[in-house]
Each structure stands twice: as structure tokens, then as C-alpha cells.
Image 1: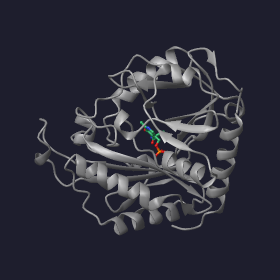
Image 2: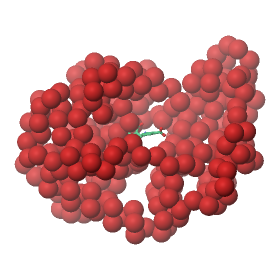
Image 3: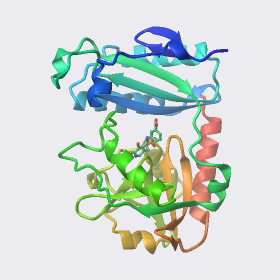
Image 4: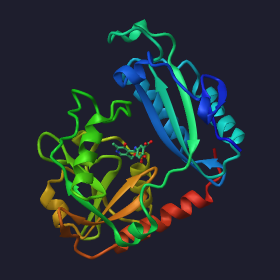
Length: 289
Ligand code: PXG
């Protein structure tokens, strides 16, 4: 069956799913997006992702034009039309078709695109062995320039960092903020374990508030693990007992090396493994929409 893509209320065969070259999403990266997973026919943390999409849209003064429930229905209809039980859902809301020139208020209504596909960022082997990472030179966007809490279509900051890490032969790049504190990776949040406590940079470090990050914090607290959202410097990473990354696509993946330095307990560490197991239990058991 040919995959179908939703654009503004209609489903199109993949080959015919196209947007205008005058869409300000293309011309200026003016828009927002979400990446969501569907496990066993149920959309994981659906409301949390939809809320973040609306928050991102509000932050850039963009009207989505549907209620949250209408948008959820559109996602479910698209999954159904594609007969998908396991899927990666990419929601995109662009500013819409306009004239050349930055003025977003020139544009017609925003455009909503829903792609349901699959994604595998890392091989199974890497979940067992851990990723090679580097600390990149590209600093994470300053929150007062383009706040990383906004999941905008303007991903060049992350892409520049990704280019650096790919050229260095690493799978992910760890980004620092302008003050030299650890922020996050190009498409994942970062955690370390030190003396059986879990640490992750605070939102004020300039990060996307990852939905997976929030789930992991909850799972750790439930398991009686102390979680600290604290500023970290690169030395804290090098001295960690364990390190792992989180994201909707990656889920939880161990880090083996940072800038060629091995993480202490080898990989995956005990706490990383226990959280990964709990995360997998949650995604395979949940059935709420
Ligand atoms: N930080 C950044 C910068 C991200 O883009 C995360 C953290 C993890 O957030 P979640 O909510 O997923 O736990 C992300 C996630 C894509 C795609 O192409 C998007 C992300 C990651 C991988 C692929 O749709 N963003």
C-alpha cells in the first residue's frame, strides 16, 4: 500500500504530497514540528507532544488553526489510513504560503503536515555497546536569541553541530551553551550517573524539554533514584560513572566515549540498563491515547 501523507485535511499519496516553494517554512524555516512514536497502535505521550507543539507555535506567534482534539484526530486518521501500529509520526506546522520577504503576516493560513513513517537512528549494536560522541564547537542557541525550548523548523544550529560530529566520526555531538555548560545533543537530551545519582542539565541551560527526558526523570524517581537537574561542565561528563542520551527516536541509548574518553563503568551501566528496561516496559504496555 502506498504511504499517505496528510496535508491540511487531505491525504495524498507520498509522491504527491508537496508544498509550495512560497511556503515560509521552506523560505525561512518559519514553523514548528514534533516527532512522536506510536507503539502497539497507541500514541505514546500524545498529549505531552501536542501541548509542546502548541507551546512552540505560540512562542513564534503561529496559529495552528485546529483545536488540540481536532489535531489528535487528524493524527489518528492518518495512522489508520496507513494501517500503522508502530510508527514515527512527524507533525509539521509551517507559516504557510506567502510572498518573498520575512513578514509572516503576509502568509495565508498555516499548513499542517502529518507524516507517518518509521525511524531508526541507531543500530541495535550501539544500544549494547554505546555511542561514540564528541563535544562540538557549535554552541547551542542562546535562549534569548532562539529559545531551544521551541521545537522550530529552524534546526541549523543542530545541523551545524551534527556536521561537526559526523566529520569527526562520532554518532552524536554534545553541545555546550555560551557559558560553557553542557546543554544537550543535536537531537537528544543527555544524562549522567555519578555515585548512583542521576544528573541532567536544567532547562535554563538552554535545551529542548524532551518528553523522553521527562519520562526518564519520572521513572528514576519512582525507582528511588535521586535526580538532580544541575549545571554540568565537560569534566562532569568525563568523570561520570554512566552516560546516556534520550529522545523519542533514540529512546535511551548509552554513551561509550566522549572525545575518545571511555565512560567509567563500561556500557551500558547498571542504572542506564534499569531505566532502559523500565522505559521499554512502559512503551510496550501502554495503551492509552
Ligand atoms: N533535543 C533536541 C534538540 C531534539 O531535537 C530531543 C532533545 C529529544 O526530545 P524528545 O521529546 O524526543 O524526547 C530532540 C528530539 C526528527 C527528529 O527528525 C527530531 C528529534 C530527534 C530525532 C529526530 O523528527 N528531536
